[in-house]
Amino acid sequence: MLLVILSIVLAVTIHFRHFYELLLLGQFLALRKSSAGKLHRLAYTRLYIVFIGAGMMADLVMGRYIAGFWRYNNYHLADYVVLYAFTYPMAGIVMVQSFLTVKQLPLKIKDRPSRSHTLNSRQYVVIIASLSVVLVESFVGGLVSHDQGLMAYAYVLAALIACLVMSFATALNNHGTLIDEVRGQPLRTLLALFTATYFNAFLHEIPNRFAQEWTYINFPLPGWHIFNIPAIILIGWPVLLAFPLSVYYWVRSLHPSF
Image (tube, rainbow, N blue to C red; front, side, top):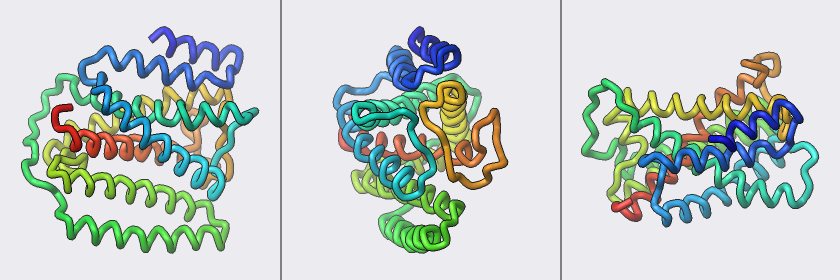
């Protein structure tokens, strides 16, 4: 927890441009102290490997090269190595730990866990294929018209499709998915999703307004801000939890003992 506090102090007082790495490391260490936030060692390894690739695709390819939604300030080659080898994988793991920790909190909510899959294989294939068609149309339309709203829509669609693919893979392993959990325990799961998402959103984004490690550019609804954070970014933050969790449920399906 001391690292979390230190990172925020450094961001606010001296605009330390690598506050985020300290923040994530502090969160990771703090969350590992809880029984829910401490994952199996092999789970960490699998999540780390997947999140490296996902981070490069979501950030380097889609977020910056294609859509140009943000940039990193005063970054050099070594900084980008740290970004993709540490920051993105660690951020994904922290999001998973946050959700599991919040979900473990005692709440007077009575839900009935689902014992059957919400979607069958045919439904997964149809939904993924249909959304993929819409994704291509939105992506091409955004590129041709230079419409950042369409590009943002395509970005979210791509993340949603990735979540569905991971959930499909999990279901094929005959294991419960995040979708199944939302169906079986809607109040508890949705509350945990909302809390973990926006606790991290404000914890990560507000100090960055001082440090300016990254800057959002060319985003839709530029006049709409919450605590000086672009509203469209906060609207999109749930995908930063949904995808890591979908990967975690898949990893867990490979080893039910986790």
